[in-house]
Image (cartoon, rainbow, N blue to C red; front, top):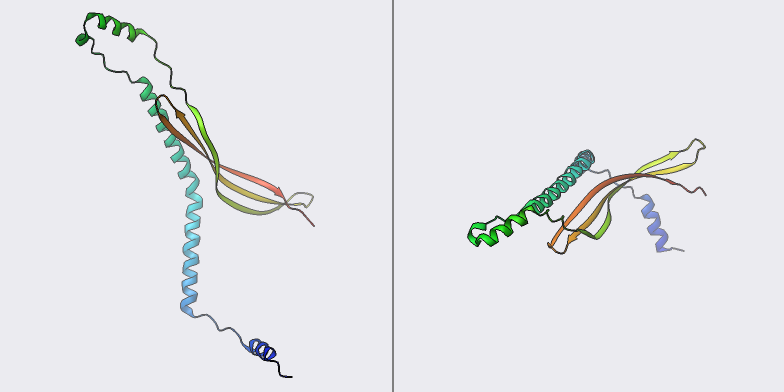
Amino acid sequence: MNDPLNDIAAELERLRPSDPGEGLTRRIEAALEARSQRARGTVVLWPWAFRWAALAAALAVIVAVAVMVSRKPASDAGARGPAMASMAEQSDRMPPEPAPPFRRVNRGDYLLDAEDGGLIYTSAGTPWRKVTCEYVSASEWRDERARMTFQVLVPRRETVVIPVPID
């Protein structure tokens, strides 16, 4: 019996792949090298840059709130007459209005990156997997009276150890 599928299978067994050309090998090596250099730079710089950005944003929010609370309208008591001038003087002696009540309207945790740290073993020889995750906790705060909204972003990095089931 002459089966065509057996003939094709025999032909495929005789075939061998050819070696890749030098140009292809060089391009793959260059791409892998560029990728590893980018990855090394990202791992070292990313957490610090993110922390500085979060610190700058928090500082900007604090300064903005402080400026808005401490700002008073200019007193033009002379133009309003003596009765208004005495009222303006009394209002200057009154305690300042408390800061506007902000309330949190939205909160979320966002996973940015997860890295597998490989297996680690306890003294009893039990395997555990080490996983490092980078998150951003975002909170949005709003003051309805002043119609102000701001968002606070807090980066964090967590390393957890997860037991590996052994079958």
